[in-house]
Image (cartoon, rainbow, N blue to C red; front, side, top):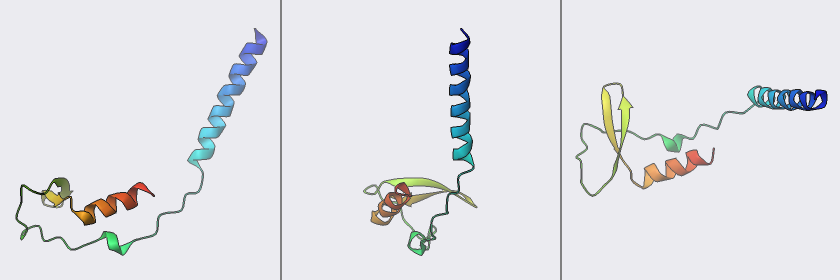
Length: 81
């Protein structure tokens, strides 16, 4: 009975140490990639039914960003970070 309890405590402490080590582990920030930023002409853009859109929040409310090639490349870059 004492052995099972000791193993349980040891397993709990091992899990706790693992979680703490992950929490305090140094993770460098990803490098700033200026290619991920482009000018947004949301007032001049017309919506088209041929292009899928992604809703995003801006300072004036929600805007629709087209899921074009640039959007897909940015998603792929962010997935690899």
